[in-house]
Length: 523
Image (tube, rainbow, N blue to C red; front, side):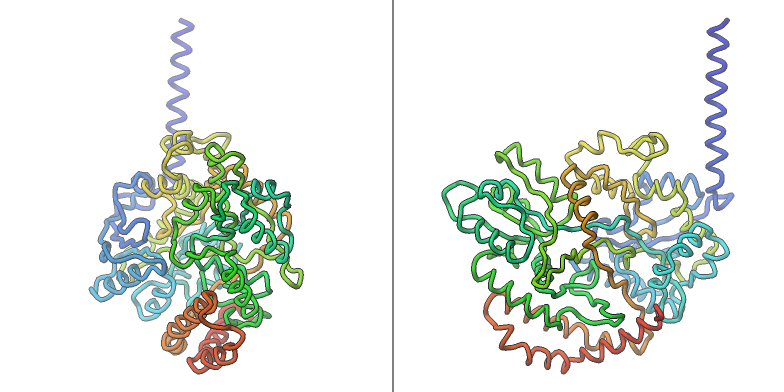
């Protein structure tokens, strides 16, 4: 009898728990009956929206919003500038049919251009009236709201919002330092001496002069070195971007510190301190040079780069760890790269959407506690479990040969074509102790600097930018590479370089950018 009573009590408790969960989940239901909305989603990691993603299936069950894929241009070319996705958006627009929801890489400029023309719905009033979680988010982060605004003052997309501050850092072979009796370099002068020692003193101990002192997976990471001579390589986490200096938009590639930096980078390259194949080796350089015990230092992501310490099982003593940014020639220590708080990726509501209220409520769902967890960690019980109120990845996810982020993309989580607020804890869980120690080092030194969050042009400003900027940028990069490779002389050619930039329209571009900046952000 006691056993029967106990079983009955357990069943009753289980039923109450299931009922409580069901009642709690009712709050996420947007439509009493299933409501179908069409969606286009383009991103280099997932060229189409997949209706069978487990994350989407759970969101569908919770909200009663059913998204139907109508993506066009899914097979278009994808490159580092996401050209293919921009072309896919143009193709969609040219088709004359805009889906209810459009999610894409680099959607910001597209919707800010065509939103005021009616292609996309303004979201301001919809958010104020029907999206309490989004409204609260933007009230707490007015700088992000300002950065999202188009020239007409309206918001046309909900962005992917990265979380956390730290992205890339300087890494160096600590085992090589130990072998040569050196300490992590504190200044640019010490950094140069260290790289020369790596080049000439055989730290890998194989009797050959085969070491590559400094390398980078993406060649623009080489340009970060200009900060050691008080230059800048970018004002945001996008390569070659504009920057804000004294409340004014400037371009780093027209500054005196940049000139000095390029001159010295060219000298280091000529002396063999920089990978001779840095412009051609590509993204496999880190894997190859570290696994072959050849690479000495780089500038790269905390989590993925720290992961190479697994090579200690193959290379005796291998230790590749972060070190603080070396002090520049004037004594400044900065880390130029940081996670930008807002990306130009995300999703928008098509101008012909007949259910804008339900759609903005669906967007708002992803900013609820449950929606945010779903977007970041995947499905509960499959990718993660709840432990003391926190989402904790299963061992099967953390110990898989497949990177955690790739596993999440495959189930519909961490989608940058979706507007959502990332949770850095998802990454912290698969960051090893070397990454966490490096982040703590950078946090203690407070090396990060503010970022340029972009501007929104009106039609006339956009025409000026489009007319000149592409040609200017190509010229800047052409001269840059020529100087580094030693087929040009930055000192001798600098005055002509600046004259050419102005002739090509740099002053005009900066003028419209500053006008847009002051309109968007005020004083």
